[in-house]
Length: 194
Image 1 (spheres, helix red, strand yellow):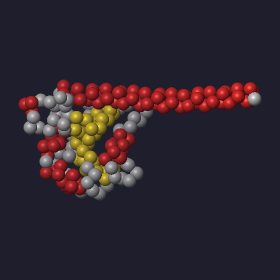
Image 2 (image 1 turned 180 degrees about the vertical axis):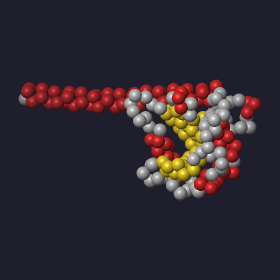
Image 3 (image 1 turned 120 degrees about the horizontal axis):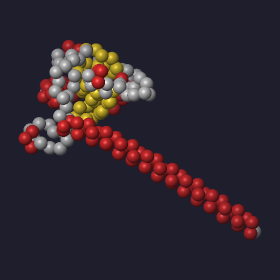
Image 4 (image 1 turned 90 degrees about the horizontal axis):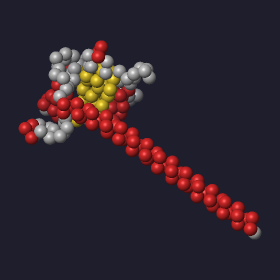
């Protein structure tokens, strides 16, 4: 199983139940900040959260969940040896889950501040170990909010690029059809003159 498939499974988990409003916003490969802070140069400034979901309803307390995707046992074991790598994601979420292909990790291997979710071959998710809810998380800082805003902007840019690509393809097909019609007209004129 590939990480992209797990991202798709998590997006499906948070898919809107109706067309009226999206309860969850889901971002993948979300940087924890923008720019470079020289004072924090020793930290991993390019740190990303694999998938971050926020419930957009105030009545749900803007509940935030961070997901760390692991598709290999070695990668998971490396992550367990370096808990500082997930510290920022823990700070920015109410819950933190490791998400792995079914059976890759055992629930007892998961640190107490984390949960475990399996993804099966049909890309269905199942919580194997519930992540504890941390109520007293600090609100996101401006660097993180700027990163979230940038993701939204990048999504719009990608959408515009796709629309431009589609328009260019349509224009090429249209030009091919025009050229074909010109050839047919030319052939008809030749036949009429003969």
